[in-house]
Length: 123
Image (tube, rainbow, N blue to C red; front, side, top):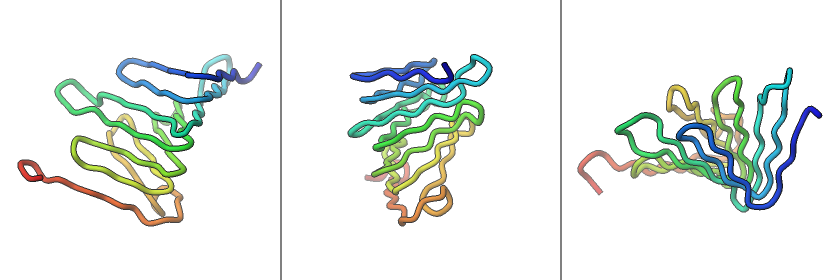
């Protein structure tokens, strides 16, 4: 089989990365997982980018973790939270390795990005 499907209350964990969803499809190439697609109402993930940093949390109706490029694509009411900052759009791409994101048109989406930033020491 080139893919495996998990349904119900699914949790996927890899190091400090955890993904929760109603349904998860794992696709394989050469017997190695290369893409994980999670759907839910919403599907959610969290990751600790590095020790001493704050958790990065995200949600969307669909989350695709592209293992080969080490990025996560959130779509359908996508939201990403980093410390007190939040980003909302129809599509957000989060680069796990660089801890960077693209949202809206830059991520192939069609809607504007809503960004709420809280500079250090201010609320």
